[in-house]
Structures are given as structure tokens and as C-alpha cells.
Length: 234
Image 1 (cartoon, rainbow, N blue to C red):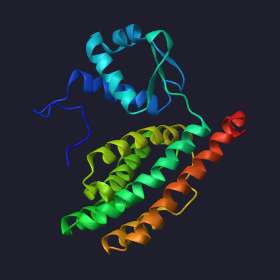
Image 2 (cartoon, rainbow, N blue to C red; image 1 turned 90 degrees about the horizontal axis):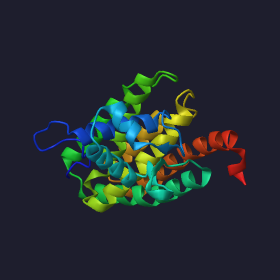
Image 3 (cartoon, rainbow, N blue to C red; image 1 turned 135 degrees about the vertical axis):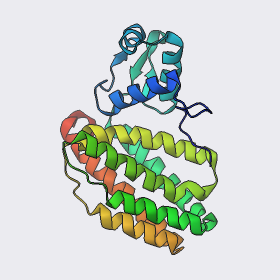
């Protein structure tokens, strides 16, 4: 399927808008641009040394990914975080991803099976060190690649685009709240169980395992958010 990464032109060279998008995305994911913060485009333009046109294009892409919102008076702000928003992301993911996985299992061939196991191997070999930004970024990249590989043979571009958006929104919670926290579950075994069920074409098992895996991750995040934003628990 076609990549959802809009950072590069056909030549393979990064566009100005794509480079700005990547920088803004990282600042949002890591909380440098805080949730709910207003975006001053003139200041960002000066800081990044770019024109207003590529900056607006980058911001528009991040609006599509749910990381930036259009605010009152035609401005922009970083999307706020809340328990309700996390719960909504989870509710959509547990419906869409297992469905996509079932379709991927039905459509997948030997190349897909090999890709799933290769993505699992890379993920297992990528160390996640709490508090180490570089290792956390590498692990998150490998984790997202594994999940994407599982469902990429669903052959439904709109579903994949929705999945991409949900993962982008979920990643911000993970970066903000899990960067200094060890993983509390045995995700290595969870990932292996999902991958094995998928390549063995046990669609019911694979879908159930994936749903439980997503819900387990959300439960951990929710606990941390409620502790940080107690008013959101009401």
C-alpha cells in the first residue's frame, strides 16, 4: 500500500513542509509544545527559518493527525489531553485494529508472514530504557512498525489512514506519560502471541489478543493521567 508519510517528494528528498511537520510533531509528542498551548505562527516561522506557506501546510497535516486543533479567532493550538480523549482513541482502536488484522490475515501471503516476524524480531531487539529519549524513540518506532505490519494487508486505505491518525494521537500520551516509566506488562510475550496467532491464521485468537493488548496499554496510560489530572476522573 502507499505510504502515509507525506514528508517526502517523489524524488525522495524531504520537502520544507515535511521537515517542519516532523519538527513540530516531535515537539508536540515530547511535550515541548504543551497540550493546549496556542501556536504563534509568526514566532514559529522565525524559529524555524521558513516561510508562512510551508508552516501552514505542516500545521494542516498535524490538524489531520489530531495533534493540533483550530482555535477561536482563526488560530491554532496544540490539542489538549484528557481521559475522555484517551478513552475515545482506545474505543476506536479496539474496533478498527482487530478488524483490520482479520482482513490482513485473510489476505496475507508468505511475504506478509515474513514481514510480521521480522518486525517482531526487530522490536524485541530494540531496547527501551526509561528516561533515555533516544532508546524510547527507537522502541516506539519499532513498536509502531510491528503494529502497522500486522494490519497492512487489510487493503483498506481509509482504515489505514484512520489507524495512522489514532496512533499519532495515542503516541503523544505514551511519550508524555511513559517516558520515565518501565513497562509494567510482559509486552514481549503479548507481541509474540499476537504475531504467532496471525501467521498461523488463527484470526479469532489474534484479534482477541490484539484487543487485549491495546486495552492493557490504555489502562496503564489512564492510571497515570488520572493521577496527573484528578479532575478528569469525574
